[in-house]
Image 1 (tube, one colour):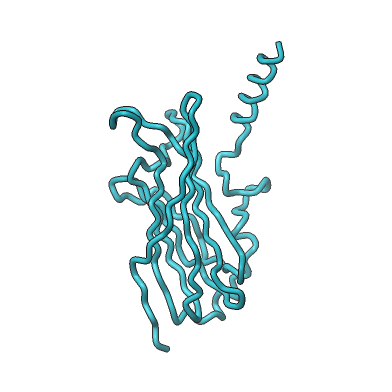
Image 2 (image 1 turned 30 degrees about the vertical axis):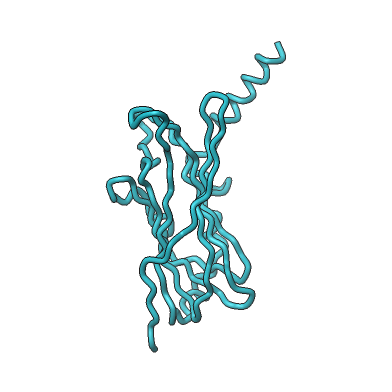
Length: 183
């Protein structure tokens, strides 16, 4: 009887997760809601960069025909005690290079020593739910800027389970388009 109750509680917990784990209970993006966009306009972005982050939303198990789905968390952390960083754009791509989702409607301020994260959940495949996982070659690009090189730390953390095995690992971001803008 105890096992049956535990199974029911577990099933209810998984079925009660919100459709978009990046939104608060009131349906707003929790990170964008806390940003003063007038402040974004006032910050000069003399230094910009694009970071590439591998996001393994599934990994192969024995063959390419059998995979383990993973939840992906994109973590962006300020690398400065004093300067603000602007996150201008976050794009999520599938294995084929097709953009699956743009995560920001407007730029977001990353204050000194602040962290933000976005989640790509394990998608339930159905006719009504598009597959947002992206595959084994999924990845993010994050465009950011600042007055100086604030060196934000960007990582993707993946985790999941299959049968009685758990999988968890982290991949660091890589700069792919540094630009110093002279104004």
